[in-house]
Length: 272
Image (cartoon, rainbow, N blue to C red; front, side):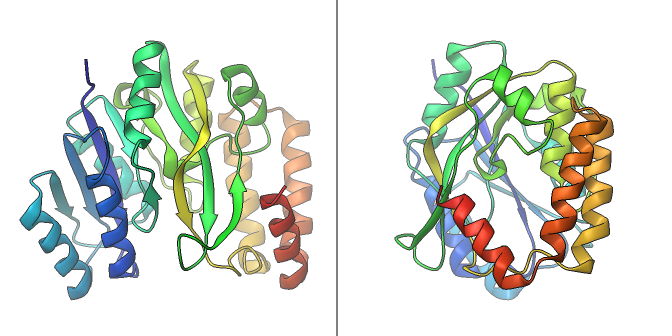
């Protein structure tokens, strides 16, 4: 028996209209259709973005757009979205990524196979510009025990490929504001409360990225906020003080590296 699924997206005014359309089209092309696509508008959006939403709404009754008067950040927008979703299974989707046609079907099957499952993500492909321009892959641990261990120092899920149970997210306190770490912060709280997780070892999402994104992910503007975010994750999650100190040291070193060298390190990790 097919399970009812909500797809949750948060849309910000700086998104490219063409990327939004490609993302929504990939959901509408799923072999297992969701019952709704909840789009939280995180503040005012451009006319071109609104035109994309209008066009999709004209050909699909699945779209449920919830405008917010002001930009409040991703954590707040997603918390509103989780509350608004009508179904127990919620699939997160970024507004510039492309889901494989079987994504929802394969994740729903995982939940049906294991009734104890609360979180399910997958591996992803990263691309720049054209979906055929693959620049890397992000692999994540498969089984619950290794996911829990991995979470002590790194994010064990690809957020753009996540599907979770609404009730488990609400029991963990829902999304909370923590810039750059909104998803990871929720995951560690869910794992801490004993939720069971699984990562499908297939690339179910093509994640859009810039070729220089990782090179720019550093400097003083990232250093202190990153340390504060990781400290809150340490306090909320499964890791110990040594885990936090290791992560903090790596973050400090990476943040202070020259942009070019940082980009080379990330590129090597992604292509590993």
